[in-house]
Length: 187
Image (tube, rainbow, N blue to C red; front, side, top):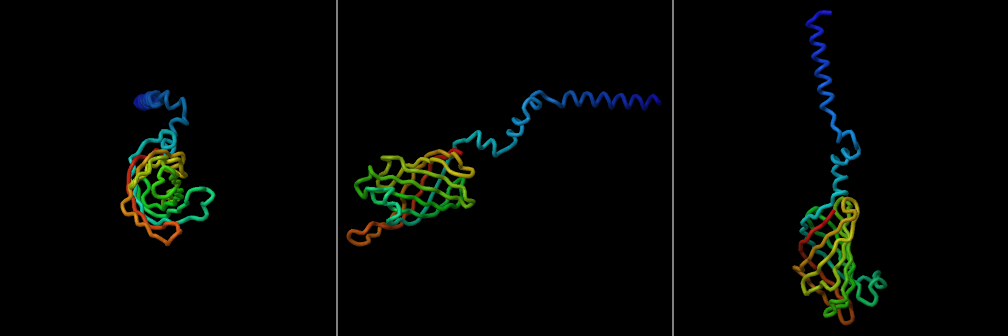
């Protein structure tokens, strides 16, 4: 064997041993699943939910909802349907059931609703008891689906353009609304 050739082989072998010994670390070998979850953004989002500022606005209509009479008994059930735009969601549709004692009975009001994003993910929310004022309501996020599965948070909506239609004596109210607000969402 040629001496310059054996020196080259020896150097290559020495370099290979050096690279192999320093390329492996104890952390990477101990738990390969941990390394995979560290680079998987979806896994991090589910295991490390964080509080995110949330701005939200919507507009739509409300009217008497006979299908919710049993749910709201003895209160008046109103169905609210609208659409809007919010941070972390973009454009969305919203549907709520408002069980109300009517004007002057704000301590008896309760709202539950679902926001549906354009891709079908949902956010469930409900009003905070006793938070109704003449132009605002506080809400808590109670869950959702898709990327909002297990979501939480709080937000306040302020009425910006409510219009109430009187439908005649003894008839329930209907109208249009617009609101905007902010808070935070955790997902």
